Length: 454
Image 1 (tube, rainbow, N blue to C red):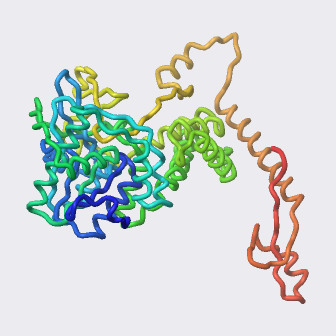
Image 2 (image 1 turned 120 degrees about the horizontal axis):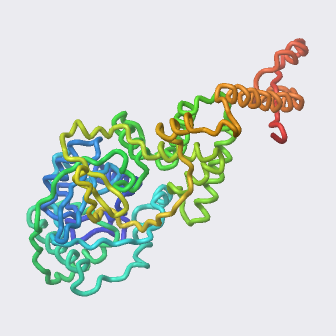
């Protein structure tokens, strides 16, 4: 069987099994849709979500969410995230004028699933067929008459209907669903009719401060995906380069906020930081770091203040301006959502496009005091205790940093040596040695080894 035949269902249907929320899978979906014929795109979403989801795609790069209130006051949410493979497929199909079919089973109460997937970054070295086929070894068939089983049977039936009108059908579904959809299609299993929902989905604008709870990628990495798309640049290495961009952005915020001239957030410190993050990530069995790993390493390298700067840089999404949409804002939390901020009532929420198992961990960070607390410290201090004058402290600390940097510079230059130029200028051209050997016509370069100690 060829690689393309692995995901074939019949003669007219090709499946692209994906992990929801992965930018790597979104890139694969885009490549396959644009490189192969497709006259109908089928997606694993109920038909009642079609109008609001496609309306939300029109708002991109502003992030929105299609929300449906279920029985019991639970919010069923579909985030319109450009890093979602499903959203990417619908977005490309609309641009190419390809009809879309929403074939998932409608229900009054959607049941979420949490699976410990491997890191999707492995798609840089593995084909989609090898990656998804390896996951079949750990998948159990759905229980009879379970919602998972009903959804697979219904989507298999819907594919038979689409075959009557189209010849090149592409189905985008979860990697957890595609073996059982294929089984239901091949065996022509009986199906249960869908349950009519209690209410129609509504489109909401996402609160910029709570994007962490709607997106699977970092909000800043999602911003880089959209930025590269607008600028028509490749997003092949955004998953890795995004971590470096977050560090640079965090350093800018740190310097602007604290007005420091001398700091230890140099390129050498960042190199140590990235090596430390890599080791922590590999110890956890991942290829890309999570938010906890990044902030924990930043705290240990640059202190609490830099850890907070990394946290704030990772959650930035500059395109998010909810006022331009005119939609009702939605604030999210851990499995919670607040639709009406004036009432402040938090409802339970579930994300249809998030099947990855997460672990929430706590980290102690000492934030900067707010204005009210600063005023309290300014007027309610103990005159008989130790007093500090910030302008004087800053001069003393700056002098200390200046002396330390100059000492390290002198120590490194004491060990400097000159070498004949071969292929690299190393630490710069040594004019003195070059003029001393003017008769030979050779160039000499300086080699300044790193200083020992601090």
